[in-house]
Length: 429
Ligand code: 5CA
Ligand code: ZN
Image (cartoon, rainbow, N blue to C red; front, side, top):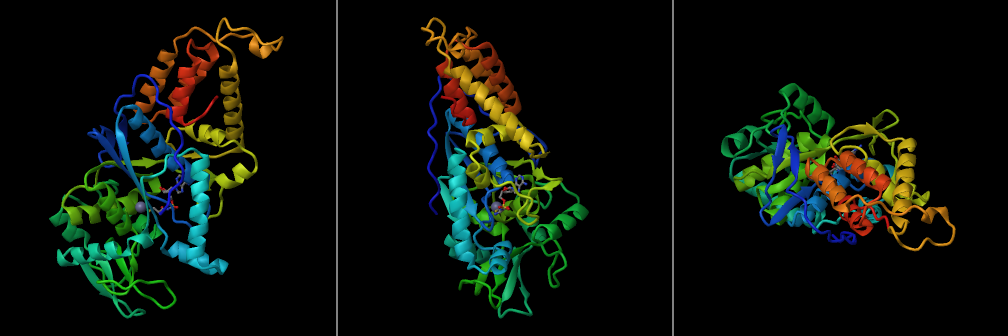
């Protein structure tokens, strides 16, 4: 699929160090050494409703990571999927009386516009599930051949559904159920049921075995394949797309914390079963944004849409700044007051850098031009910014460093402006 236009990112003198990131699997900080090229996979949207602030926060977290990697001198290879065939999309299309393809295309386009307006770096490989159905079916065949998948007969379809055998895969590959999420079985069972799994399905070897391939049902879209007519289960799409474009053992697998289990756990399991290698080195998760007391979600409908804010005339840089003022791993609640604070901070920063450097001719009698820029070294502020971001993307600390530099003024405004643009994605001048 076509992604969206890349933001212009200035080069800044000096460089970041390799960032440390919190790893969900080991529950500690890891410095993932990317070699020359950092390889990143971030789960994409299920396109049945427009981009909300929660999505934006997750994509912004991994955008920040890429900016730090680039500033540290690494190339980045970034892949992202689009879940353009799945139950929630089909249910929404049926509810609204539209074709699922039209709904998906419309929402993907809106997502592109939202991401571009927020200055989010686009993926190099932006891959919809419907573009790789045959490859997913092939992967299912391989898992069957290896004895790591099994068929479960269906009452309402002609063919069989296909399930992943967690236990067999754990014996045959460098993966164990729970490795990534560190959850106990009861919690896994509860989350599995809440997040698209089917623990009660009769005929499974283990209640936590996830669906790999769903046999065609009447009225549901399906594709002919070597495993039978049907469509992919959820987790296998990300394993196949990630392995195809990034290879195994890539640098970071990312997404929101609601994906840690079962989605990322199972994607890592499928990928390890296919390749014999771990999926990624670091499993990184962004916090959940709430609104009006509950997690912002398409299914609940308590959404603050990026497109609605843009239409209301909100500067996308202020949305970015509001999100960046929280640590990416924190769970927090979006409020209008936080957006107002971000708008005020952005104005303050922009006004400060618009002043001429010390010694320049004041323009007329405008008091805004009377205050000369300060003499604090901009290099020190940029070093603080870089150190904060390399430390598990500590954007609140980074913003505090810029606040101080703006307050005192710096000797090289251009350097500060470029660093804020390159690393925080916020254009001040
Ligand atoms: N298509 C799948 C991933 S393969 C999916 O989860 N799509 S999604 O549209 O539901 O979510 C897209 C991304 O936004 C995921 O990383 C998810 O964790 C994140 N996300 C969803 N809701 C929130 C929220 N309220 N706060 C933060 N991130 C969220
Ligand atoms: Zn995914």
